[in-house]
Image 1 (cartoon, rainbow, N blue to C red):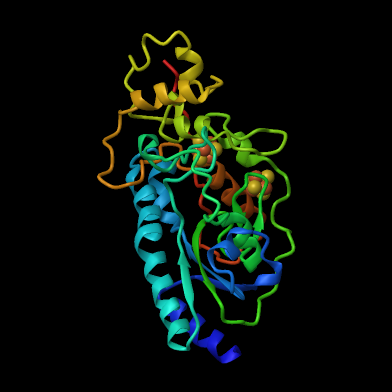
Image 2 (image 1 turned 90 degrees about the vertical axis):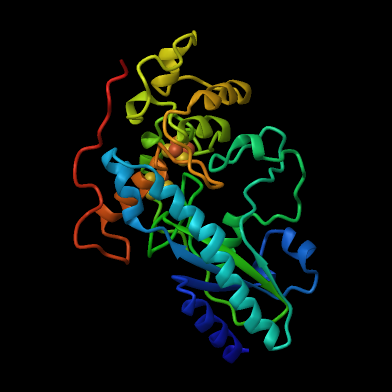
Length: 310
Ligand code: SF4
Ligand code: SF4
């Protein structure tokens, strides 16, 4: 089986996967795996870097499409293509292989939301018990650790990667689990969020609060918000300062009014916050010198900008 694993990993790397790792079924905690494939023996995780340059426009306050477009390209093109290539290697060897990419539009809970897509398109309360918990499975495959913000952190890219899985009945040698060592509880992720969507005590993300501020409800981080935005909203100042505590219903009202930046003609909404929680984490880990992939210069080159509220 070592030979098959080598062949599989070589095929995945040929598809430009940056990190490939494998967990055996006995250590996989997500019950959805066995529901999906009762005979499963191994789960393979493949991860792609999110290019650092795709955050540059948001960092400088100039252009906002590249981050979301790159996420979409990874999720919709690169990862599915690599999963199919990897599955073919396994099936050619006589084993069954089930590709698993993120499913963006189905939420288990009635009031949950995915901030990366249009909330009108999300199906909720579907009890999607056969959809993998991507973070838990990544850790169990040996990709990395879960940070305080809930993002998976790796030695290579910090919080900046996207990934998918192959579930198979081939019994492949597992890779080691990662002992958590990167997240130092600094809470830079919490402090960086323009909408206070991560709870200070435990880092729990409020998915609706996050959705409103991901899309740009904070005036100080949105150069495209006109001066009269939310003019009739009794909580206007709180909303544009990122201090409003939004119920799901209020968040929906706010999100539907944030059309200051032309929408992408794709499935993912433009990120106006630039996933500031993860950027702050990346900056923190880079400044500590703990990331393996080094650049000639640090990502953060200037103080973080902020526009006046009025
Ligand atoms: S910013 Fe700090 S607390 Fe947050 S996930 Fe990164 S290392 Fe952990
Ligand atoms: S920084 Fe953006 S992605 Fe992160 S929690 Fe806040 S709104 Fe959500």
